[in-house]
Amino acid sequence: MPPPNSFTLSTIGIVHSCYKEKFGIPRQPGLVTEATAKIELLPPYNRLDVLDGLDGFSHIWIQFIFHACITENWKAKIRPPRLGGKIKMGIFATRATHRPNPIGLSVVKIGRIYQEKQKIFIDLHGADLLDGTPVLDIKPYLPYADSITDAKGGFAPTPSQSPKKPIIFSEQAKTQCEQYQSLHKREISTLIEQIVEQDPRPSYLSEQTHREHGIKLWDINVKWCARNDHFEILRIEQE
Ligand code: SAM
Image (cartoon, rainbow, N blue to C red):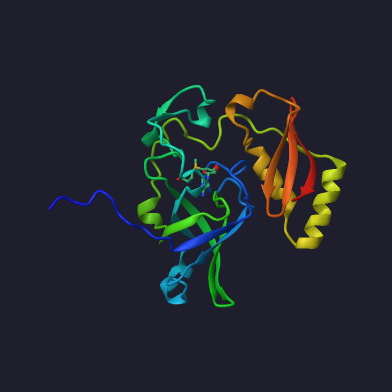
């Protein structure tokens, strides 16, 4: 009998994340360590026993659906931002979101595993996941099998090719961050710094300066722009 060529998968959990839209999310996990998120397990998996033993691991693999681009078509060749958007690579040589099966894979540091009002959560640190991401599976990261010290990184050997520019907060943004931090008990300025440092702009805008960008985090929109030799955080707008 030939193997089936289509399968039914179901969501086992949902991600609650600081990232409220795609723009600004780093291209891989671990780059913005200050980013916080959590997985909420959904019925019938919302029970603590399915996580028995996970507290001995520091990281998990998360398989998830790129739900925010599920209706868009896949492409055989794409232009990785890493190559300045100038060179095309085969889809299966990239980690692009527009894939024949829109499945993502991230290795993420875990924190507390806990139950709150009948709901089960796993805290995540440094995830690259949009708020509302449907989770298909969770597996422990196994250092002996998953860490390959002599692996080659192809056209993406390091997190970024361009040197990092300094981040400067305007007086207004500085005050707003302090107010936000004392109100919400969340370290927001380091989070903003780490995100903007990655320069999330699409390659075709990377030469442009003085254009205002916005990154939606939690309940705020962080307005910033690129200057010649630094990035400036302009202000924070409440959503
Ligand atoms: N680490 C994953 C992987 O390799 O499969 C994701 C890599 S992909 C290049 C990273 C981008 O996916 C992020 O910059 C963000 O814009 C996008 N992303 C994250 N969660 C998403 C979701 N639920 N739907 C659509 N795009 C998403």
